[in-house]
Image (cartoon, rainbow over all chains, first blue to last red):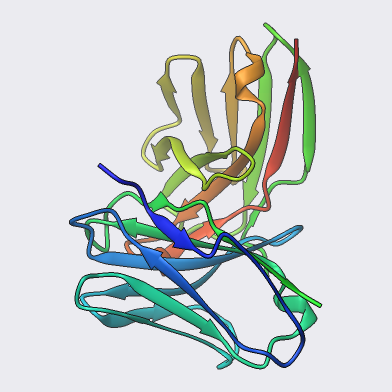
Length: 112
Length: 113
């Protein structure tokens, strides 16, 4: 069974640009959550989607947004990129809102 | 405000010895605790967990201890193996949903052959 797939794996952007990251969950998983990992901050929760609805949102500015499609695939978008947005963005899927999280390999974003 | 803290960013241990990774938390509402392991270029994977009604959970070489009064948990790996070299994240939950799961900053364990 294929795991959680995130694309792209690596990308470099400049300040002010926007970026879209994609996450394909494990087949049958309906919940997708996103995390930002930075050195010294650990994994910070961004948002959680279930059945195309955002269920929860972390403490991030409105520049961070996301959505989930009917096939459970999810995208997150960051607009007006700042240097501090450089991080590893991890996606995790689970069968339900209470299920075990399975993480993807992450998308490493570098903002110059 | 970091509710889950791992104060040791790194730890080096000789192969065959015990590795002890520590984690402290501040929220007394947390009722479930987990450890995740992360290799470079891979996502974190679940390792072991413990409910707040227990003080110890063991799975092979891995044991997690919970001290609720001290708001402290630890992960013991015995014996340590080179393949255990990874970053270990402690996480605590106060209910269901990913928004109720709080991660520590991680400890990089290096097991020296």
